[in-house]
Amino acid sequence: MTETWSPEGEGVMRLPSGRLVRGRGLRRTLPVGPEPDFAVHLLGAPPPGVAWDSKWLRWPDFRLPADRVTARAVLTEAWNRALGERVEVACGGGRGRTGTALACLAVLDGVPAEEAVAYVRRNYHPKAVETPWQRRYVVRFAKG
Image (cartoon, rainbow, N blue to C red):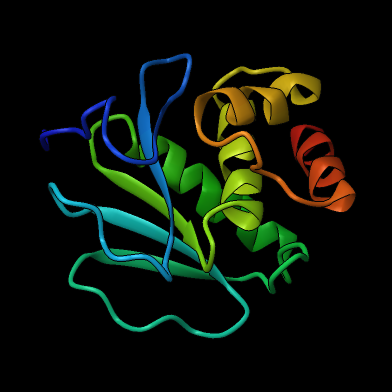
């Protein structure tokens, strides 16, 4: 089992199950500390390569994932891997798409969909999930 993130680490959110997931903006420098074991990059174009396992979800800024079936599969993989690995979710700025993905992880972890955005804003960043359609996506994500 990999050493997990520190719950006090920059951008690290604890889910109700105890899983820790780090959200961040890729335009910022990599936080000090251990590197991720797995990352999900939420960008409109392919991200630069990284030294750890990662997946790219085509997700343009201020929008929704281009392929919702793939998004569900990748986010479910991230949630599963967060049980014993360091998982990072990242977009350009670290707020809208990252916050939306973290809210979806919270739903997978048992947070009611109607409360998931507030959970992420309380536990990750107060301005996470930037658009009304991102908030609606979280509720629809819960329905499968």
